[in-house]
Amino acid sequence: MEQPLTLEEKKRVRFEATIDILYLMNLLGLYVGSFLSPIIGIIYAIILKSGSLSERAKRVGHICLILALIGLGIWVLFIIIIVVIAVAVGVGYGF
Image (cartoon, helix red, strand yellow):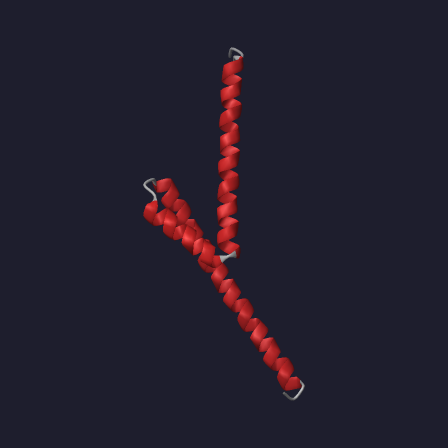
């Protein structure tokens, strides 16, 4: 049978859970920022992959780079679609 946790142990467990939540929120911010702004994502990736000593941070940098490249591809595709639509509308109106 498990003994109940002491107050100090409960505080330690709660503190560690809070740190884990903050870490995950930080990762989410890095990943969303990398995807929505590819330049920022590439900068994150360069900093994390070259300046970090831990494998965990290098892996985060690698994911940021992948998301930045995907985001860049989507932005380029979006711009191409806008240009094609603009040219089609221009041709339709005789410009």
